[in-house]
Image 1: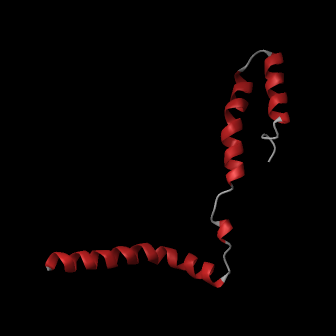
Image 2: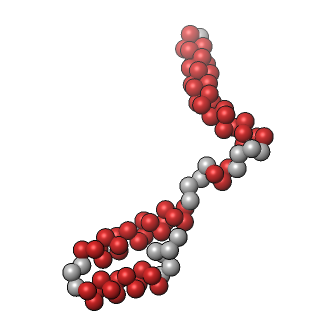
Image 3: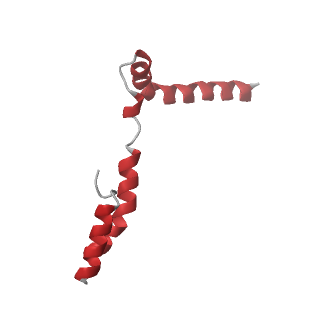
Length: 83
């Protein structure tokens, strides 16, 4: 019986610890003051940065001007280097 009461109290305290910091966000979202889209990161920018950063670093390390020029043109034509 003591274990059940302890578990019950632990769940309640844990829930309060989780809901406490989130309550201002939940009330703003419920009242319509907060756009939930603001909470999500910009996936397009993250994808673009993750995809192009290895190419941009490689362009800086390539010593041959023709190869680095080709890689720059490839990035520009792929439309991934532009936000």
